[in-house]
Amino acid sequence: MAAGFAGATGMRFIVLSVLALLAFAAAPASAQSDRTIADRLPLFAKNNCQQIRDPGNQLFCGDTELAAAAAKLSTANEARLARLPDRLPAIEENAIWGRQRNLSCAIVGQTAVRTDDFDQVKACLLKVTEERAAILQDPDFDCLAANTAAGALICADPSLALAETELNGQVLGLIGKLDPTAARFAFAEYGRWTRERDRKCNLVGKENVPLQELESAEDCLADYLTRKTDEIRTAKGDPKKVFGRQVAAHSPDTDAVDFCAARIHATNSCGNFLRINRVYAVDSQVTDREAQVTGEIEMVVLAPFTTCSKVASGCTGTCWDARTGRPQPGANNKERSADAFNVTRRLRIQRTFAFVKAADGWRCREDELAPVNSGNASGGS
Image (cartoon, rainbow, N blue to C red; front, top):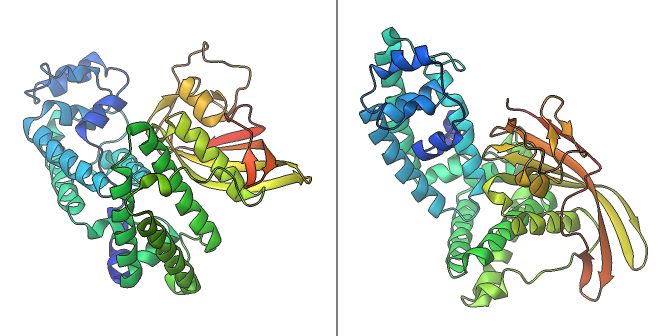
């Protein structure tokens, strides 16, 4: 299994469906490039492909064979998402592949595909799309595509992989019984469980560490998977006995900040655009009854959104200056910007959270991320 994981690193780039590709398009290409490529694309006019700026997306939009292949890929991708309880990492992988796909087929930036190169580029796009659809249909890929240290360890150990599969099935079964709003909070809680697990097992930031150096964490992962599975079994099919029960943290620390941030993200439906990747407590001031904890939260962009918008302010706590990658506290939702964060960008904010001591632990008193203390945007373009 470990060898399979090593061989699968090149498969981590997952293609976006045609619908997602069209949704991410922003501005029309030049009129000259439209006329050139339109001659080779029978669906170009019917699908209004001239509105799409990305040359690769134009081919998927206007070519019959590519559109059919992408439809099959979309079906395979939806099936994969349906079997994953924490779908956000898979969505991120989709975005990464979408950003890299063109380069693998010799499409550079926004440079239009030359008519002389059309057949070669189309064949390449068709090949990678069909291969991707076949890969997604293999449930083992969910393990092989793991892009975290914990995921790699679980993938490499058959007993851990089996335990995680069982836990995932139990979680999905429970969430499927919830209404959409409750399901959104449950998915956010599951993501928080995973981050807490990685912190407790000392696996955060160790994606590039050799597996043999991480073996000491295997018992910790096994304990987590067993404990959560037993917890769900004890609930006897009642999701309310599993999700939404914890409203307080044991201590005013990183776990408390994570709990607070996850709840805020679920409230604002941020999972459609951002995934909380890592959370750290960097400072704290604690008394007997109250605490202030400064936490750093790293988020990964899953779908484009403008740098000053309701998503930006509600899900990252601030508007942003696209040029500097820094918060723009003076801006507001009325100051709409054409600049947008593209997928795979990483946004980091520092924010001080207030907690109060209650009978069941430390409760977060914050209901939004604004205002942030500081922040930066990195990666992507």
